[in-house]
Amino acid sequence: MACRICSGRLREFADFGRQPISDAFVEPGDPREEFFFRLAVGVCESCTMVQLLEEVPRERMFHEGYPYVSSGSSVMREHFHTLAKRLLTTELSGDDPFVVELGCNDGTMLEVVADAGVRHLGVEPSGGVADLAAAKGVRVTKDFFEAATAARVRAEDGPADVIYAANTLCHIPYMDSILSGVDTLLKVDGVFVFEDPYLADIVARSSFDQIYDEHFYFFCAGSVSRMAARHGFELVDVERLPVHGGEVRYTLARIGARTPAPAVAAMLAEEDAAGITRLSALDRFAATVEGNRDRLTALLKGLRAQGATIYGYGATAKSATVLNYCGIGPDLLTFVSDTTPAKQGRLTPGSHIPVLGPEAFRDPYPDYALLLAWNHAEEIMAKETGFRESGGRWILYVPDVHVV
Ligand code: SAH
Ligand code: TYD
Ligand code: ZN
Image 1 (tube, rainbow, N blue to C red):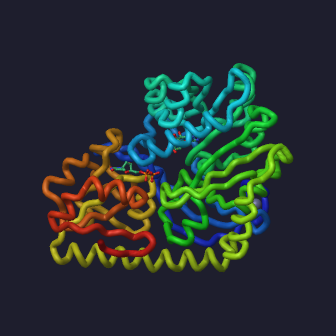
Image 2: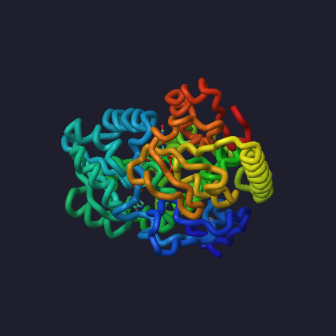
Image 3: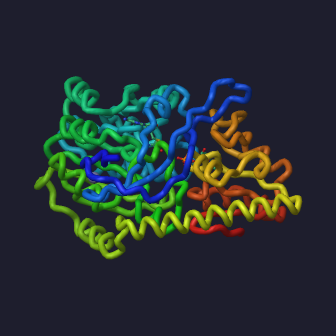
């Protein structure tokens, strides 16, 4: 097994067994067999990039029926609107600037750019969500971003002031093609800004469910700066973000084009001191995760044996890992509540638990709810105060198994 960034040797540290496509919610009665792959993760001995050991073909994950929509969380909508306004005020130059977003999904970020009348393009291979973006007035092309796409966009639209990607770059194994595409498309002094789950937060919080088919890479400042250098880029800024359980927003510029902010050296030093990419730390993470899996399974089985009802909350992609790794099925969770229309009426991949709309959650409330969308805990608990008032209790498994 070789590193997808530098061809170095990979050391495996965790194996979650056979896993389905995390966003492939099953139509009841669909006779087609589900696709499974081995979900295992390792670290590169040379460049320290943490990555999956098996790659799922991209068309199996990202297609017309891809169900995830960015606008499903009001906190995330706010997050992307704030970021868009910031890019518009700080990163544009000349009288006809151009903004590109990779994985623009339903256009939650780019709608602000479109409304400001700024030239832009979303590159989004999943047709259904791309249509939602287009309906908001966002200009979008239904393509996978890669070197060839970049060359075409550059020829048609000219160079970009800023290329932005949220929760998308870590989904893409073929990084050489991506970064050479960014090199082709970006203005000489442009920036490539991307934000993804932060390895240090995943390790610190034992949030093992961040590991699933779509999340191919688990970035940190160290691995990203080495990856950038291979293509003539330099890490010039980093910013920790509280969303999705802890992320970092990285800014790359061409080497020498910008002076790196002090935050970069600080984060690199912090990572070195904590040793987050050392095999011993990652082995410890894997051992903690196994313990949490056993505690979660025991808790759910014990509660069910006492006759308690338990529903799941949030049919996240992440929950595919939790449900399948812990062997949680419809015997333990009656159903999973989720607001996404394309997930409702279907079954969770691999574990086959029905997904219903949030009205089912309230009619009647269960005794317990397993918070699968724990990264949206504040938003969800604020909207489901009636559940607590009815005597219901939340079960969480990040950073450890506990009931609140
Ligand atoms: N940026 C949004 C969506 C993240 S989901 C947000 O943060 O909420 C990841 C998105 O990346 C999906 O919409 C998927 O279709 C898209 N994607 C996957 N591979 C891609 C590629 N090579 N180029 C552009 N988008 C890609
Ligand atoms: P999310 O954690 O954002 O991402 P991923 O699928 O990549 O793990 O998914 C959140 C899911 O939870 C999404 O399907 C929408 C759903 N959801 C609700 O049902 N209610 C809510 O209040 C919120 C915020 C999300
Ligand atoms: Zn490597």
